[in-house]
Length: 152
Image 1: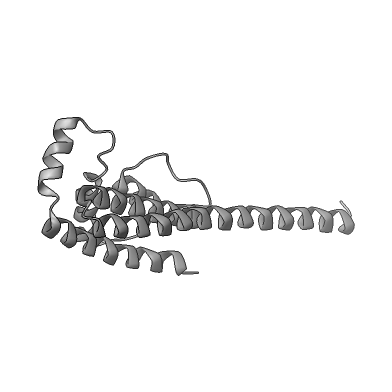
Image 2: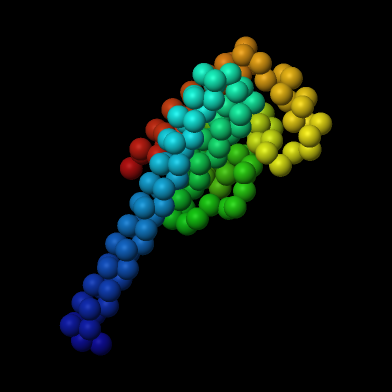
């Protein structure tokens, strides 16, 4: 193989790598944009006293941030799951035991496809005090996860 052919091959690999990195950046931005939108929705629902819905959107925000981290770290699409603990494992980042336990609790807020009796019992406990406390923790965890995205 001539030097010229090697250079062409190397250029093609570099171009493909750049294209892949652009695609990864675009996908990370996609998940971040969705998470930011859902974050605003979460806050709006809380102000409207739609507490169960605000918690549902809190779950969505964390899910989308974790999916952005998966894409950034693994350079591939995340699994098609809503389970925050599965996404955390796939993202290959470390959280404290308390943070992981909280993610397990937040998983329960993904109630859209649950049975009506489960939804009704959740609606009863998701009052102002309960919701405010959990949204504060969701916001703290979001802040920590945003830092993961910002890492080089």
